[in-house]
Image (tube, rainbow, N blue to C red):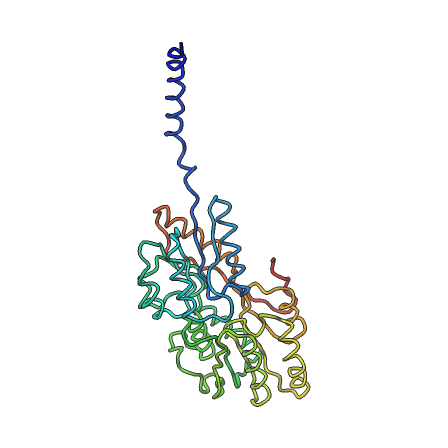
Length: 335
């Protein structure tokens, strides 16, 4: 009695099987990518992570922001990178703290995970380990900082450069760019301190290295301003203004006093997509200018590069995202 019913169902089952086999490839498993940041609690990396996550979600994928909290350190980043490489991700974008150290440790276990860099590239000797780079031209970014310093102090003067560490590749390039611009020689060795070229002299105690710590940066600047006569200060990162109100509270009275004495230095620094409180420091004259990278766009472009690699498609060797100058009266960046 049941046999005719079974025979009747066989064509339906065959039709269903054919439909499943011919389903479009668009229904493939979603891919998972990650940005491996220098630190995950800093504004630049939060914005970059948001840009990557939004771009990935639009295509059914995910993009994680991975790394450690607190001041960046290459040993902690190496540990986070080792953990990320064990997660079976479809691609990793790395902001490099210490190129040689990472190459000699975590990146030895890179395996088949596609790696690109963003924000901070591997040094030339280790660059073969990554497939591409997304971010700003850090040497040109440094020249832009130098150009703004020249705008506010065209006669030159006594200068101090604030840096994060001596290892970070992107910060080394920015430092070199500042020196090239102020020296007036783009092919000059950026490792050489300014010693009078075009009227610029780096004071003996500088560069100052903050170890990516705002408290240390503010203490260094307070001590410097109290003990050294300066014409300009330029920071290649945004450490002094991670919390804008702390900068205002600790340095505002001192800068006002120096202004009254006619010896207040011009201050120019990097500030990626500054928020309203950071922009208020410009409007109130506490800082003269920022140069910022479009961190959200860097995150988006990092996702697109990783996705193309995962799909086996060709990619550009690098994607450069324009930077932006912020002067008093600039509109706040979108959150």
